Amino acid sequence: MKMMENNTSLCSSAGVASPPNSLLMRCRNKIIGVRTKMMKLSIKSVLCPAFLVIALPSSAATWILDPGESRVIFEYKYGADPYEGEFKGVEALFDIDPLKPGSCNFSVTIPIENIYVEDSPEAVDYLLDYELFDVDTWPTATFGAEKCRLESVSSFVADGTLTIRDQTHPLSFPFDFEITTIDGQVGFHLTSEVTIERLKYGVGQGYWANTGEIANDVTIKVDVYAVQQ
Image (cartoon, rainbow, N blue to C red; front, side, top):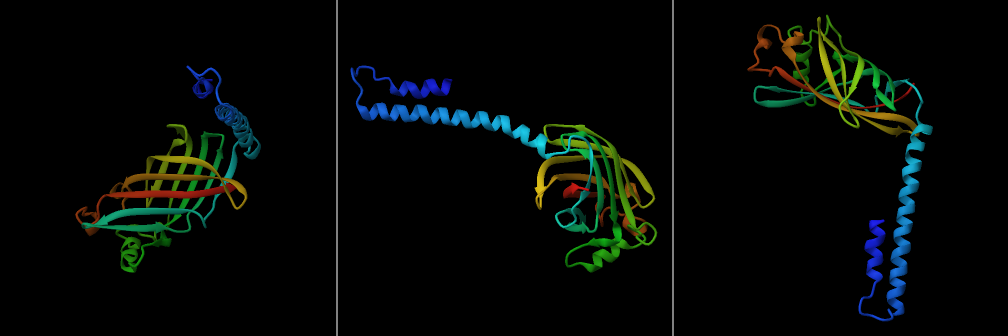
């Protein structure tokens, strides 16, 4: 109503006995324009929630990672130089209600042998070696969570456990959650960034336990899409 009052006040002509026709037409057009905008906003506020209810499952469903659209990146420092690699072929199932993401069940499997570091096959060889990931003995890492908690409107934390090599530790996995469409299917987009300590998981035996060579902190960045199974 304040918008209407501000605009209609422009039509008042203090000190003018009879406003010219051009002024009256401008005022009429302003009032019609304001009413039209208010009607559009009212329609959108009603239809948007209704669309979400119609388009999305009304209860928890199983969602599967879309490998073609998803990336799981890790970043670390070797000496003073930053390196970036990627875990390829990650498999994940999410039992989650997109309308109530606080109730969730995550199951993620990371095939360590599929590590990729651009332009550095030597770095890959070191990472797969027995003193670091020891992929021959422990070919996969896993993350599982059975509880999520709300942080803000679209931000959550999954409280679960991460297993690398023979070490399993609790991990709080923060993530942002967004409803989207993938090839015409309703899905969701999940992004996250979390830092772990590699030595806590046994990634660094012998020479590689020296954090002066490879920093202890490793940052994992997740940008994945999932569709209903």
